[in-house]
Image (cartoon, rainbow, N blue to C red; front, top):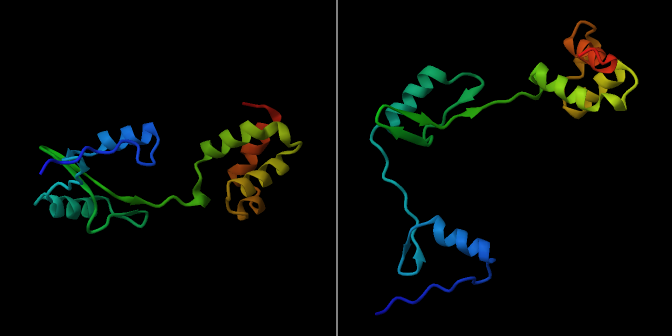
Amino acid sequence: MKPSKPMKGRGLSHKQSLKASTAQPRQAGRIVHTTPPPNKMEPDYIDEAKTRYETESIRIDDDAVVSASSNGAWVQAWVWVDRNNWARLDVRRWMDSVTGSYETSDELAKAAVEELQLSESWLDDASHWIHEEAWLSVMGAR
């Protein structure tokens, strides 16, 4: 039996059709989904990654994706990003980008806490660096 020709377009845009036709191997006009066989070393790489790197902020699933090569492997991990621990540089960049919209450093600090979803306790702590960053931004001291 002769395989039928694939129907181009079939409700897809030209770009989508082209992407679909080149994204996966084709066989007799059909897309064949291939999954590489599991590597016997994957559990060892996962266990080693857990031993070396897993912490309260870094988690590695038992069935993590492993991309192995001849001398090592990349192991998929989950990294926790706490909104209350924004890097100071990120807050500074945001403040510098909007500082013209605020008259006082207190207004700017409060806006940063709201916009970046930072801890409101930072505003109550007069020694917290957020106040210094707001003052430097408003004063144009950078």
